[in-house]
Image 1 (spheres, rainbow, N blue to C red):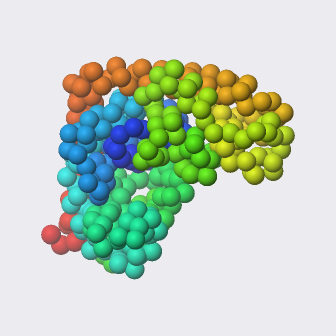
Image 2 (tube, rainbow, N blue to C red; image 1 turned 45 degrees about the horizontal axis):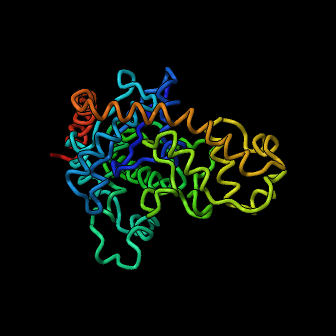
Image 3 (cartoon, one colour; image 1 turned 60 degrees about the vertical axis):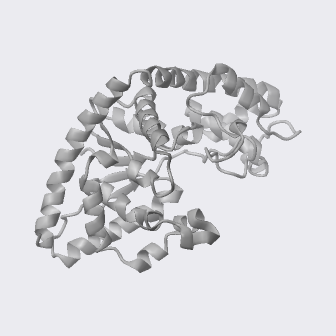
Length: 333
């Protein structure tokens, strides 16, 4: 039996190699499996939990849609839409926020990390967005959600909300309890300037990341300047663990080429970084350059992207509004 998959990406601009290897490449794989029913959402309502420039937000929505398509997600096979265009997401989020409990949300570590010491000044949306995430998932009878380590807790909350709603209103299995879909053989992608920090678009130096819109020369330059140490490449995974920059670059190579990290270690053991970096640049260019070129091409065809998003909106709205109607009936509205 096929999986019903829902996943969302925030349109915050500058999608990079970490986003691609951590999520989008896996989306393409899921999209290509015939039995799967996939919905890929540009979660613009989640993006506004922190201040956004409206014009940039609109551009970023287009860029995210273009990235999905350029990476190989087929809009004829999967639904691609932006969250704010389907009002059921906001309406269901309010209803589910009356089911969720403060104690559950207080345990969410992501809010503590994102709000920092100044949590009194953080928006209520930043605090409660896991409830909106639950609405996103539950409206589509989702069976599986691709998640990274940082989102596992939010999926647990979604499962708790679904179970509480089913119990409170005595409607067994009304909300399907979604399962996490965790990538096997995936290494977290770290900054090219500091192997102990996650690759991020918020890092000031553009040299810290490979953007999906980077051209061939930019990729070569960034890999050439990527931080390394003075030793040759290690012969064992135990040695690699003590060298974060080497581990990151070798993990990127393994993830791009779909080979086991141990095989990458064996292949380059004892080699110099300069030789390895040339190989890494080549495989990155082969994978990223066609995507980069296609993104740039699609961004010049906004009317085509509008058609894709509108078609996705219509399909998503039909499913979500029917589920919302049933929720409202159960609630007594």
